[in-house]
Length: 322
Image 1 (cartoon, one colour):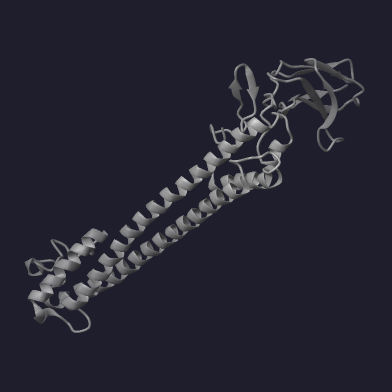
Image 2: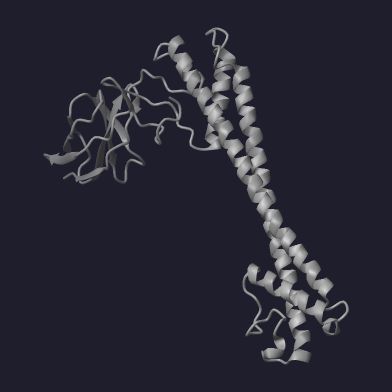
């Protein structure tokens, strides 16, 4: 099944036979790439294979739906960022109004907090509010104070109308953020659903091809899928040992790697070879490299191979010749 598991190369078991898993599409980018590959394969082979599920038109519908929802989700993210920026701007503007109002009130109520400040919103302190919620509370209370004490207003500087307009602007900006968050959640849900639909289509296409193609048919790769008949790549051989024999030969041995049909032996003469050089391919678990240059440092390593591919190489073992 496409997308089953977390590792695109991890083998699965059918009976006692280990096979290659199909690709895992963990991101929307890899999913769309997988859809494009399957669409290309369908364009080439859907008619000749008489496919009814994995057709170009079906792929186009599913891919386009993902692209549309991905783009809509991206726009929703941008809208939320913009709304949050607007809240930040309104907070700064409201802070300026509160700060200016406090300075004007100090001329009448005193530079230190006293009971004369009661009802202004500055309670037990003349410090500025640190949170948006506190700012809203102080602004609303000060608006009410100026409404009750119109003699304290200063035209175009500190009036109930100015405080009210600033409070409304801040509240509207916060409400916009709430709405944008909700819209973002809706778009994310829609995007994930379309991604799920495309994954299901790819999975059904794999099942349909399984009824049409031999497990080793090359047309699997035309759809971007792995050949189900391939064995899983063998693991890295373990416990590589390398010792000097005589003056210029290295004897090597290692443990058997599961699923390996043969092994590749590599060497690198330090100061001579820029990279590891392929030496030989053997089915045995030991090998001797002869004719090495004297008084040299030589690194050797091994990889395991089968029809599914080649493992990573072992850690190199360093041997000094005489």
